[in-house]
Image 1 (spheres, helix red, strand yellow):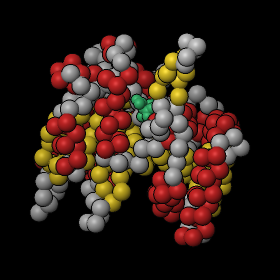
Image 2 (cartoon, helix red, strand yellow; image 1 turned 135 degrees about the vertical axis):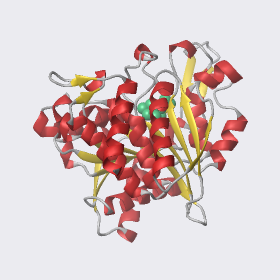
Image 3 (cartoon, helix red, strand yellow; image 1 turned 60 degrees about the horizontal axis):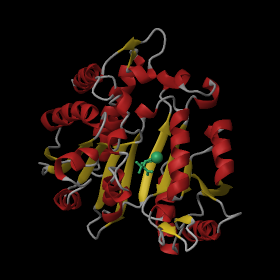
Length: 370
Ligand code: IPM
Ligand code: MG
């Protein structure tokens, strides 16, 4: 008898609620058909929270996030809230969750599904079979460094300031996550920074190398400058297994890697904190894509990135690898059967709506579990 797993669902803005609606149907399916059962609570984050509660994340929702086994988030932001002052923007809700839950390791897989290899903007043979993982540091660097702000100098000139800063423990802990993941994969890590122009990059390179030499000699480690990495990602992406990099470079490179797969609408992510004494890690799962305001509310969005984020939740937070496999197989089957949401539709495929994709996934799950 498995005890109830506590999940906090934060659908957020734009297409977030409609893709999450489909994922909740799948969560209910697992609740009814598999050994695991869930205690679900739902909350507001981002613009939705600003409209209803006046802030992008209330203290109550923050406290709930700290207490549950895992958080599943849709997406935050949109033009409606663009004019708000920086501290009250929807994105601050997400950044607060990351920082206060101490989710320092952001896992962003870029995986090309066989059925979608020709949806990539790169030539099919460059991406077919691509399976890489970007490990992005998520609670440090220029996103959170101080001093920061905009100031006016005595002569009236304005100056904007942000600080790129990393300490050795911050680098070491995310490097360990990358090396541990590589051990379960092809045993290669590429560490990415700009050691040619930034002191924080020099420190990054030295610390990653030291962690490697002390504990991970079985892993092949290479170092690359971030600009070269961007170029190599579109030139020869299959050279990479695990990339480990800082918060800002990871933000940029993961969007680039995502596009290699043909659709941002397909990619999940996991953000993990440090394990406590009982081995439990705080964790938040979310799709890599944003709120896509242009198609929100039209039942067109692709729910698969959020669904695959739920699969990562099963795998990494609940240790339910078989259940995660079930979802991934259902996704593969549905794609192989030719069903596509608008973002990945190709000639000859059958276009389905967000809810139509949900129906198809549930149908496949029923067949796989029969
Ligand atoms: C991401 C997003 C966020 C980031 C935004 C929404 C704050 O781009 O998760 O990649 O920059 O980290
Ligand atoms: Mg981003």
